[in-house]
Image (cartoon, rainbow, N blue to C red; front, top):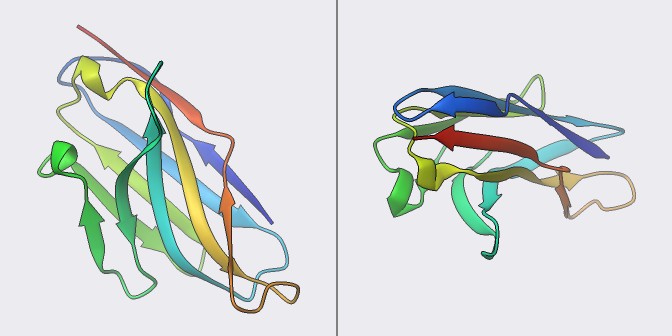
Length: 120
């Protein structure tokens, strides 16, 4: 199983970006999916998560600015980021709990990350 992220880049403060992440491999189903981020010198932190039925959870620092969504048919999760500020600069990682023949009760996988840089 691999998670492939895309959509990062450089944007000015107040701008928007949309991150995408797709799960590939011999997958039975994808349970919870989430986005985390890690800024330089800081610990990785949860940004937003979404269950297979679409229930969402957000970190306080992105509420009202970011929106997480998913497409179960495409085994993909998205993060729409609006009103970006320099403090949002970080590597953003996709995370998914995936069921396979080897891990029928699920196993958490991580993507390699995509860099988001917000300039002031």
